[in-house]
Length: 335
Image (cartoon, rainbow, N blue to C red):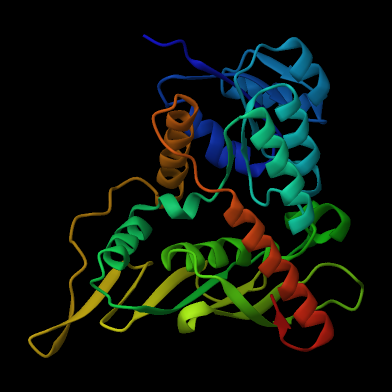
């Protein structure tokens, strides 16, 4: 039996507590050996809660004193790039929460470093690994929906206070607001489901605060080659019944979407939902997506699978950068 992959987790915030550690403690072949956070009591408490042997308050100490194979980076956005670079310098494989960096230029620097070190670098795009998204993608790739013409997605959440958002409201730490926090995932799904068409033009409108803090809401329209487009609408200020997350695909011969899963085609002249029944497991889609993504990451480390093409990250960030430019200048921005 192969030795377990020894993983260190950097950052003891919410995503570590609700996603990564609950998944990692149940995955075979992984051993979480240390948690690192600048808040040492928090790191120690979380380590005790999940039966992790060691806790550190400094990443350099973690990298120096702990024998690791891989790092999970779950720190505030502005720390992703330096933490990834530090991990790569230590010859570790890296799983990093999105975004990889704060802009396209920084992303390119990180990707060059990962290529030089020949390490697996995976950005957390967990929504790709949802079972309902996988089903929709299979219908798209089989051609059953015809030519994919547009993807429309929204993510609306209710976070009423600045205390709930914390560093995410501070531009120098977050890099952006709802667009980077929520819109990034919608944009990635839109381009990924359509098999990566080249974005050509962006038009955006953001709720830009007068105090200079990040935007709590925003919408963007991305025109791509081959007459394809992505529309996304996101907000932290949703007033309604629960969180709203959904993505819909419109093709020339059918439509599909998630939350709830549906796949509509014309059968005998009648629109019919042909989505497979009983295809969604009982596990929470959020948890299941992280479990599947970590399993993929592990397979990539062991040479049993191919990692996602990180050049997609450059495209994503170029579009995100263009969204902010479009909103600031009040005009369409060409890519």
